[in-house]
Amino acid sequence: MHIKGLYAMNGTTNISFDTCAVIKLINNQYDLPSLGINVDESNLIISVIVRMELLSKRNITPKDLQDVNAFLGSVTVVSLNGEIEQKAIELRRSTKLKLPDSIVAATSIVLDAILLTDDEHLLSLSLPGLKTQNIF
Image (tube, rainbow, N blue to C red; front, side, top):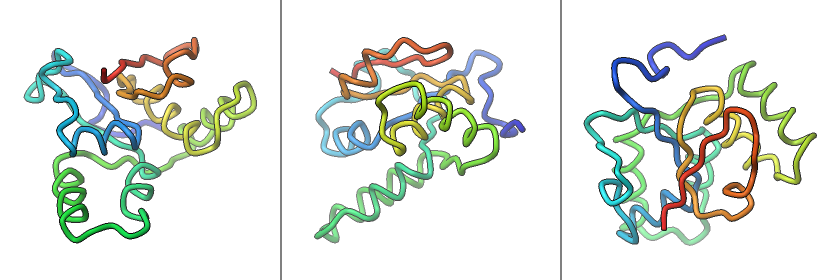
C-alpha cells in the first residue's frame, strides 16, 4: 500500500521529523535552511504518532498549542497503514527502539524520507532505507 502523493518525485525530497525535532524547530533552536533543506522543494511530513505526542503534552500553554497547530498546518500528517505498521513491527523486533520511535522510523523508511532528529539512538541505527540527519 502506497501513500499517494508523498513519494519524492521531480526533485522533491521527503523530510520527516521526530517529536523533539519539531519542538526544537518551533523553539527556533535550528532552522531547515541551515540543514541544507529547501522548504519549497521538500515534502514535510510527520507520523500521526508525532502529532499525538505534540498535542498530548501535559500543561501545554495556549501559546505552545498555537505554535504546534501552526506547524501541523504546514506539514502532512501520515496515518498508520499496513505498510508502515509492518515495517514498525519489524523495527521493534530487530532493534531496541520503543514502539513510537519504531513507527516514526518506519514512516520515514516507507516514504523514503530523511528523518530529522537529535536522538542518538535513531542517528546510530544502520537500517536499510533509514536516512537520518542530525538537527545540530
